[in-house]
Length: 283
Ligand SMILES: N[C@@H](CCC(=O)N[C@@H](CSS)C(=O)NCC(=O)O)C(=O)O
Ligand SMILES: [Fe+2]
Image (cartoon, rainbow, N blue to C red; front, side, top):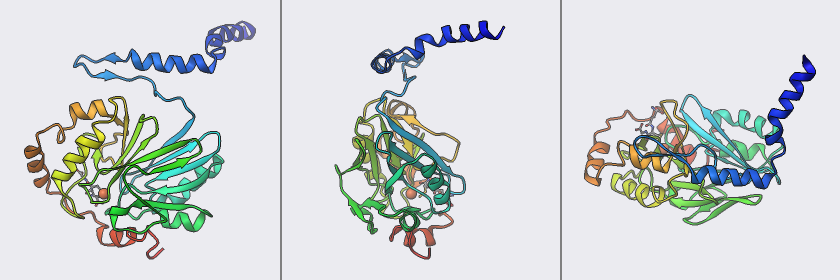
């Protein structure tokens, strides 16, 4: 009967309900230390390792296959958007308002060639919002970033790692605990950004990925700027083992990049000039 079912459910949930936060944190750590190995020796991390109260959402814009990432401090409600897209500004703001967040910074990973950034339009809609991009991008923004700079939201922060090669101004944003990195187009899941326009240089990209991304902890979750195959997240361990381009020696990598033969992004001629002024052009 109902009463019996309810008491069984209560008994079943009791260890979870009575688990103090400290014990939960300990469980995360144990889970990380005892990560299972796959047949090939790859460590399989089953649990997000930080349990520090970062609110996180991965959002997708289907026309350009761009990921926008929302990060917020669950206590202070301060939020950062990485790589907002013009067409999805209202969707993102609706979510931000529904969650009661205060959007502080719109941070671009680089001057995009395939879509117009949402940062300019967001600045018109959100009082006090600051746009950010690398100094080396050639673009203007409220915050011009250099290697090692941090973007704070509440008690959390993102640290800037310069990862040029796809463009001169490409950066990777890394969370303070190095559990997540937002790689823009420097590193895509099982791929990487093209190097045939916008100061692209395959040797530079190879060095950036090997020295600035593959040196992060193996469990660090990698979130790319785009994905064209439905993939959402990877890890440093996975990419150092399975990335079909970046696991090759430098000379082979350069040959691969010279022979991609990709068509130019359809919107490149409107996107680049617009993004050089943080998307305010013609809005
Ligand atoms: N077809 C798309 C553009 C696709 C493209 O060129 N993607 C870029 C990232 S956006 S600058 C890229 O680096 N791709 C690498 C790859 O291996 O796919 C469009 O017309 O917009
Ligand atoms: Fe790009």
